[in-house]
Image 1 (tube, helix red, strand yellow):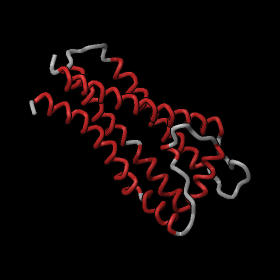
Image 2 (cartoon, one colour; image 1 turned 135 degrees about the vertical axis):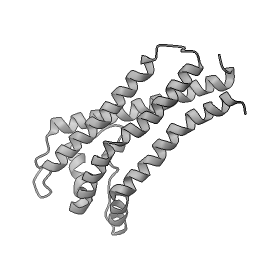
Image 3 (cartoon, rainbow, N blue to C red; image 1 turned 135 degrees about the horizontal axis):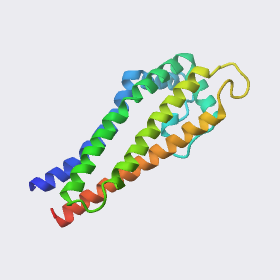
Amino acid sequence: MTGTTLNAVIALGFPIAVLLGGGPVLNRISGRASTIKRLTQAGHTVPKPLNMRWLGYGPAAVRIYWRALQKPGRLTERTFLRLDLLFPFLYGGALSASLWWVWVTLNNPFPLVWLTAPLAIALAADWTENLVQLNQLGRFQDGSEGDGNLQGAWIRVSSCATIIKLWLMSSLYVALGLLVWDILTTGER
């Protein structure tokens, strides 16, 4: 492999490794993974975590998820959300570095803002999602009727932020893959 080819493969693999490796590490460090495993083994159904719902969620879905976690699980969810405020620095930094390297290697084929703006929006959406969920988790009352003290408008903001984060980040990884493919098929320009 030539140096450029090796660097292109690393540019693609590094941010993917950070993203795919960081999620499970966050789940383990926060206790979220063991809480969900414990609840599942005890016969409880735990819905998909809110931060992984590509089509969003509403107050009812949030209530169902947080009730399923039970009180100890909600404490670990709070820890997860706090730690997840740091994760965008890691995966965003790795992706940013790779996108920049590929962009420079291809001799600046388009304005860099086409990559940086979606990344900045996705990272801001990730922080918004976590901050709103932290706030609403603090308001959540398990025994209350309906949605408890959840604020529907803020849950919708968090849901939109989740959707924006997931779709923009996916698009950026696809863009990175296409740019790496360009390097590998056409070589350095």
